[in-house]
Image (cartoon, rainbow, N blue to C red; front, side, top):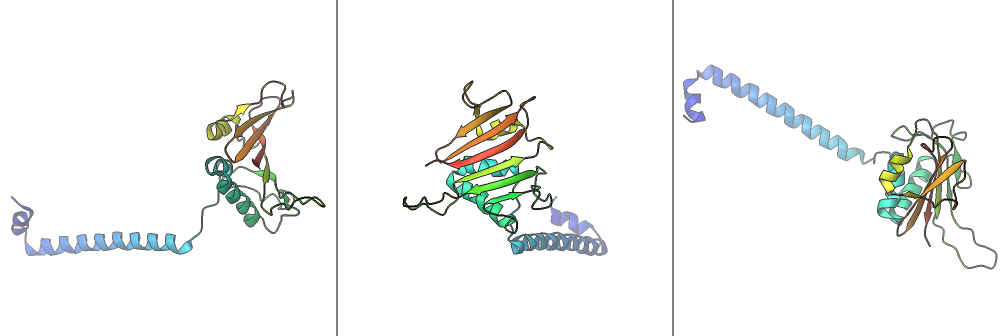
Length: 194
Protein backbone atom coordinates (compact mmCIF):
# COMPACT_ATOMS: atom_id res chain seq x y z
CA UNK A 1 0.00 0.00 0.00
CA UNK A 2 1.31 3.47 -0.86
CA UNK A 3 1.87 6.31 1.63
CA UNK A 4 -1.23 8.01 0.25
CA UNK A 5 -3.24 4.84 0.97
CA UNK A 6 -2.10 4.84 4.61
CA UNK A 7 -2.90 8.54 4.86
CA UNK A 8 -6.48 7.81 3.78
CA UNK A 9 -6.89 5.41 6.75
CA UNK A 10 -5.96 8.09 9.31
CA UNK A 11 -8.56 10.52 10.68
CA UNK A 12 -8.23 14.10 9.38
CA UNK A 13 -7.33 15.44 12.85
CA UNK A 14 -4.26 13.15 13.05
CA UNK A 15 -3.17 14.06 9.54
CA UNK A 16 -3.45 17.77 10.35
CA UNK A 17 -1.46 17.32 13.61
CA UNK A 18 1.25 15.29 11.90
CA UNK A 19 1.52 17.81 9.09
CA UNK A 20 1.78 20.66 11.60
CA UNK A 21 4.50 18.93 13.65
CA UNK A 22 6.44 17.94 10.51
CA UNK A 23 6.22 21.51 9.17
CA UNK A 24 7.41 22.97 12.47
CA UNK A 25 10.40 20.59 12.63
CA UNK A 26 11.35 21.28 9.01
CA UNK A 27 11.09 25.03 9.54
CA UNK A 28 13.18 24.89 12.72
CA UNK A 29 15.90 22.80 11.07
CA UNK A 30 16.09 24.98 7.97
CA UNK A 31 16.04 28.12 10.13
CA UNK A 32 18.97 26.88 12.20
CA UNK A 33 20.92 25.86 9.11
CA UNK A 34 20.36 29.27 7.54
CA UNK A 35 21.43 31.10 10.66
CA UNK A 36 24.59 29.02 11.02
CA UNK A 37 25.63 29.48 7.40
CA UNK A 38 24.97 33.19 7.51
CA UNK A 39 26.94 33.81 10.71
CA UNK A 40 29.89 31.80 9.38
CA UNK A 41 29.96 33.76 6.14
CA UNK A 42 29.49 37.13 7.78
CA UNK A 43 32.47 36.85 10.16
CA UNK A 44 35.03 36.32 7.40
CA UNK A 45 37.77 35.60 9.98
CA UNK A 46 40.35 32.88 9.48
CA UNK A 47 40.98 30.61 12.45
CA UNK A 48 44.23 31.33 14.27
CA UNK A 49 46.92 28.77 13.37
CA UNK A 50 48.61 26.51 15.86
CA UNK A 51 52.28 25.60 16.00
CA UNK A 52 51.82 22.64 13.67
CA UNK A 53 50.36 24.94 11.00
CA UNK A 54 53.16 27.49 11.45
CA UNK A 55 55.64 24.71 10.68
CA UNK A 56 53.70 22.86 7.98
CA UNK A 57 52.65 25.86 5.85
CA UNK A 58 56.21 26.65 4.65
CA UNK A 59 56.98 22.94 4.21
CA UNK A 60 53.86 22.29 2.13
CA UNK A 61 53.54 25.60 0.25
CA UNK A 62 57.10 26.92 0.11
CA UNK A 63 57.47 30.70 -0.06
CA UNK A 64 53.69 31.24 -0.08
CA UNK A 65 53.27 29.38 3.21
CA UNK A 66 56.35 31.06 4.66
CA UNK A 67 54.86 34.50 3.88
CA UNK A 68 51.59 33.45 5.54
CA UNK A 69 53.49 32.62 8.74
CA UNK A 70 55.40 35.94 8.66
CA UNK A 71 52.17 37.86 8.01
CA UNK A 72 50.41 36.07 10.86
CA UNK A 73 53.18 36.91 13.32
CA UNK A 74 53.38 40.55 12.22
CA UNK A 75 49.61 41.01 12.20
CA UNK A 76 48.83 39.13 15.43
CA UNK A 77 51.60 40.74 17.47
CA UNK A 78 52.07 44.03 15.59
CA UNK A 79 51.95 46.16 18.73
CA UNK A 80 54.80 44.20 20.30
CA UNK A 81 57.27 43.66 17.44
CA UNK A 82 60.46 45.67 17.85
CA UNK A 83 63.17 45.38 15.20
CA UNK A 84 61.61 42.16 13.93
CA UNK A 85 61.55 40.52 17.36
CA UNK A 86 58.91 39.80 19.97
CA UNK A 87 59.12 37.92 23.25
CA UNK A 88 56.68 36.60 25.82
CA UNK A 89 58.06 39.26 28.16
CA UNK A 90 56.94 41.97 25.71
CA UNK A 91 53.43 40.54 25.49
CA UNK A 92 52.96 39.63 29.14
CA UNK A 93 53.05 35.93 28.22
CA UNK A 94 50.39 36.20 25.50
CA UNK A 95 52.23 34.23 22.82
CA UNK A 96 49.95 31.23 23.29
CA UNK A 97 48.93 29.67 19.98
CA UNK A 98 45.52 28.20 19.14
CA UNK A 99 46.68 24.65 19.91
CA UNK A 100 48.06 25.59 23.34
CA UNK A 101 51.76 25.64 22.46
CA UNK A 102 53.63 28.66 23.80
CA UNK A 103 56.12 30.80 21.91
CA UNK A 104 58.79 32.25 24.18
CA UNK A 105 59.83 34.54 21.40
CA UNK A 106 59.66 34.92 17.65
CA UNK A 107 61.83 36.86 15.26
CA UNK A 108 61.76 37.67 11.59
CA UNK A 109 64.69 38.88 9.54
CA UNK A 110 64.79 41.05 6.46
CA UNK A 111 68.25 41.26 4.84
CA UNK A 112 69.82 44.67 5.27
CA UNK A 113 71.57 46.45 2.43
CA UNK A 114 75.30 46.66 2.89
CA UNK A 115 76.73 50.07 2.07
CA UNK A 116 77.64 50.05 -1.63
CA UNK A 117 76.18 46.55 -2.08
CA UNK A 118 73.32 45.43 -4.28
CA UNK A 119 69.70 46.21 -3.46
CA UNK A 120 68.15 43.71 -1.09
CA UNK A 121 64.41 42.99 -1.04
CA UNK A 122 62.05 44.03 1.71
CA UNK A 123 60.62 40.54 2.23
CA UNK A 124 61.24 38.44 5.32
CA UNK A 125 63.77 35.68 4.60
CA UNK A 126 64.09 34.05 8.01
CA UNK A 127 61.74 33.23 10.90
CA UNK A 128 62.89 31.85 14.25
CA UNK A 129 60.54 30.50 16.91
CA UNK A 130 61.58 29.70 20.49
CA UNK A 131 59.06 27.25 21.97
CA UNK A 132 58.28 26.45 25.57
CA UNK A 133 58.99 22.84 26.41
CA UNK A 134 55.75 22.75 28.41
CA UNK A 135 53.60 21.60 26.71
CA UNK A 136 56.11 19.56 24.74
CA UNK A 137 56.04 19.77 20.94
CA UNK A 138 57.86 16.54 20.27
CA UNK A 139 60.57 15.78 17.78
CA UNK A 140 58.35 12.95 16.54
CA UNK A 141 55.62 15.48 15.65
CA UNK A 142 58.13 17.61 13.75
CA UNK A 143 59.44 14.59 11.83
CA UNK A 144 55.88 13.53 10.92
CA UNK A 145 55.14 17.00 9.54
CA UNK A 146 58.41 17.45 7.67
CA UNK A 147 60.11 14.12 7.13
CA UNK A 148 63.20 15.75 8.65
CA UNK A 149 66.31 13.82 9.57
CA UNK A 150 69.17 14.41 11.97
CA UNK A 151 72.44 15.91 10.90
CA UNK A 152 75.31 13.47 10.33
CA UNK A 153 77.26 12.89 13.56
CA UNK A 154 79.54 15.81 14.32
CA UNK A 155 78.03 18.16 11.74
CA UNK A 156 76.06 20.50 14.02
CA UNK A 157 74.98 18.44 16.98
CA UNK A 158 76.76 18.58 20.30
CA UNK A 159 76.25 16.69 23.52
CA UNK A 160 73.83 19.46 24.57
CA UNK A 161 71.52 19.64 21.55
CA UNK A 162 70.75 18.09 18.17
CA UNK A 163 69.41 19.66 14.99
CA UNK A 164 66.94 18.02 12.62
CA UNK A 165 66.60 19.46 9.12
CA UNK A 166 64.10 19.45 6.33
CA UNK A 167 65.19 21.04 3.04
CA UNK A 168 62.40 21.76 0.59
CA UNK A 169 62.53 23.43 -2.80
CA UNK A 170 62.14 26.93 -1.32
CA UNK A 171 62.36 26.67 2.48
CA UNK A 172 64.95 25.13 4.79
CA UNK A 173 63.45 24.16 8.17
CA UNK A 174 65.39 23.06 11.23
CA UNK A 175 64.33 22.05 14.73
CA UNK A 176 66.53 21.88 17.81
CA UNK A 177 66.13 19.40 20.68
CA UNK A 178 68.33 19.35 23.76
CA UNK A 179 69.84 17.17 26.41
CA UNK A 180 68.93 15.00 28.33
CA UNK A 181 65.99 13.47 26.48
CA UNK A 182 66.27 15.14 23.03
CA UNK A 183 62.48 14.90 22.86
CA UNK A 184 60.91 18.38 23.05
CA UNK A 185 61.64 20.96 20.38
CA UNK A 186 62.75 24.26 21.84
CA UNK A 187 63.79 26.18 18.71
CA UNK A 188 62.71 26.22 15.05
CA UNK A 189 64.29 28.09 12.13
CA UNK A 190 62.54 28.68 8.80
CA UNK A 191 64.82 30.08 6.09
CA UNK A 192 64.14 30.99 2.48
CA UNK A 193 66.60 29.23 0.18
CA UNK A 194 68.25 31.64 -2.25
